[in-house]
Length: 382
Ligand SMILES: Cc1ncc(COP(=O)(O)O)c(C=O)c1O
Image (cartoon, rainbow, N blue to C red):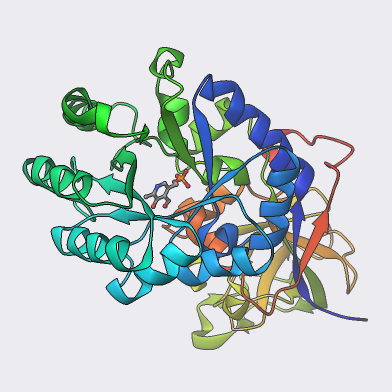
């Protein structure tokens, strides 16, 4: 028997989430964010599924991700969200990859590239409060003028990124939107489109926000079926596309006082039945979940006990008199249908669901499923 961990990717759920996203978008255009191997779900299977449904805009962070798509025959619009190195720009021009200008140095490099290597489509990124990449609003007028005056440059988009979209009660998102709107009023005519929203903003903003077919929305998480704020993702009716499963490797009944795993951080308080499960931090299960997380087994929840190891995790099945008669090879759900929500797992691990799906390790095989699970389990058991 093969005791291994695997992730199931439910492409039917990806399609369902796409529908939910489109319903919100109105006349705006979706840019599917597929960086970091489509948040761990697998770049090519995700892009091909979304293409089948008519998606024609994709965004990645790094040039090599965009080139992987081009090498595999994806000829759609590709946007590089990250700041490219100047020497990467000719490659972008050659492969028709749209670039984001987030500094005056990059603006200069983009102009030089367009003159020497041909046309480039450019998105100007403003920092309205994210405090990460972007031009300061006061730098924007001069940079736009510079780009406009350079032959071969098309101003494809004016954009910004929101810092607090997942905290609907925080007024900061509104402040950022207002700063952006001022710039758009002034300079919008120079651009083909604008884009601001990520997944949380998509569900936090009112439908009246989406009025303009010149709006794009850069959406990742919602397509994969989660949002950083668990309450929002339930309301949004999303279905988690990733399910992390591992098999029981061994079942043991241990007497009181038995310690488990490195550091002896858990000692059996009485007789316990313990399942040793074939996934650990080497597979992407955060070690932070030691003695804090839960898993799903036979539709019930059981606590993770002792320190999570590189390849193995121990689970307390309870009093041997009443514990389920779990067998080696049975599936244990770390997150996804039949186990905790990825958002719950993230809360226990003090992280965001993005990190969990991106962390599913290379050695963990992806099993792709075309159709949704026949039974939609109640949310608490998914
Ligand atoms: C610049 C930018 N836009 C959009 C997104 C998509 O965000 P989300 O996955 O929350 O939709 C990201 C993701 O990290 C991003 O970095």
